[in-house]
Length: 478
Ligand code: SIN
Image (cartoon, rainbow, N blue to C red; front, side):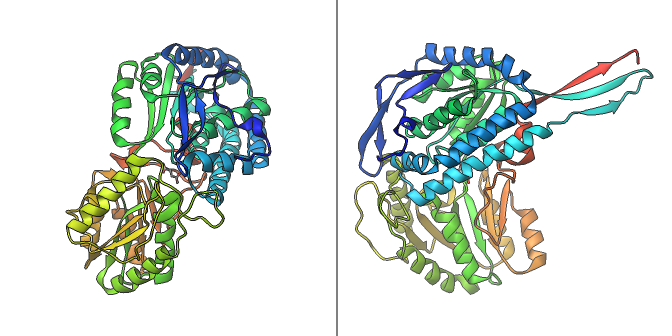
């Protein structure tokens, strides 16, 4: 891994401004299956020390003005842009996504820091007229306190900034636990936070296995909020663990996004949107189209156009020139993808895409026609480059299939009929709906799900509220 600034590659945890270096666990480059480095497996005592450091640091951090915190966040943002190439290289080597896409993630991640630096200056309370003469009620916003942040491997940079930036802007301090598959992007952000002047203890980063660190974070009464992105199973477990200390929680969990193409859709736009939504990060996002529902009149044309685009995808190591789909994160992920394809084919699906030879660790990007709701890929998130196409006849039928899952993160649909646009937009049970677009992720827009896809919203104005409490201050004797 060639970096312009090798100091950004840290194989150490960050606790109260100290870098704790140990080679307890390897971190594997998914493109080569070889270790790219090591990291400490932080203990319960180290987790407790990080929480204590965050608790101590919050006193001075929340006493800073909103403008002072915004300036520090903007300094952090500037450093992210300055070092975007190195951050992208670290990200590609630990996560696998193509370098150009990794650079896109760095810019996406940085956009949350800028947005919340700006938004943090507009944390306003309000004054409420009292029902009693001579009194006034002030509703004041205060930081929640020490926050635990647990992030996934699929966006090792942006899922951290989307949680940490609003928290820091609000005056909270952080204990971050990045995925043990992808710790180095988080640690590089820690280096840049130090350089930006964010004081020690405000941002702590623990590496290692999730069980001990997660259990210590959730059990601690000092931790007042937990924000997690990951599976619904683990989200529910964390909610259980947080219950005795009643923490505020944000949970961004699994999805099973429908992508509906109506007969009246613009075909080219729908294919473009499906490519963007389905194949971003090799299909490894919570908002990726998981079920592509196509109305019978446009079905054949859509399948032919999509299959031609998928056949043209270059599958290669993320550092290779022109790579479009990198390796999958690990063998378990690959096994699940292959099992979904095998199950679908055993139940009658066929491939509309050409066969290709692939190196170990890579998944075959496929379009599967003849998908039905009996197949595993209809009810489970595949998290890979598999595009199953379901045929439908009516709008009612499409909505019944689309909404017929416990999940409700993203949903997409393509139509040129304005009445249908409103009808379907309202009827889809999802926190994010893309109408004639396959992209629903921006710092400015609220991100989050309904039903089993989670609680709370990230990004947007809503994102900072998740890190705030409202205090009612009653003034008498006026
Ligand atoms: C995710 O997959 O969890 C996040 C995707 C995004 O931010 O677009």
